[in-house]
Image (cartoon, rainbow, N blue to C red):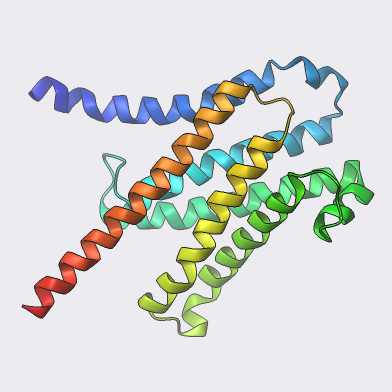
Length: 208
């Protein structure tokens, strides 16, 4: 039992590293990169990193990553959110540089590619969360109000981001991409269910 507890921490962190690192490594080995320019490659990998960060977010807020206190988990969640927004900026800026007309079509929901609208929805939801988090104190948002606003935006980020990724046929290897997307959905669903349960139990204890 003690051996399992001591091995549990590195195993969880190793599993997270593999879930994010394997898709990135397989994408880096893709033959399609030979026909891509450096800016386009940077934009593409920024998108992959962004998806990996989306996986980390519910794990942090749900307290599933060992070695982090609740306070440190929330702080890390805050900073990872900023990194996620930055990765999306790089992703979008790189694609804009390589093909402005395609990005204009995507941003105006006029693109013929089925994955584009989902990516744009996820992008605006990420920017909205980042902006609200930055201005939360100035706006005087209470914790309850913040949660009410943050929850649907988080769902939009995860759902649209996953669909956007799955519909793209690019450098990412199919199985590792699908596995990462499944992890993102599972982690988000579990975090939401557990947090809802904890708040319900807390409300019952206060009522008593």
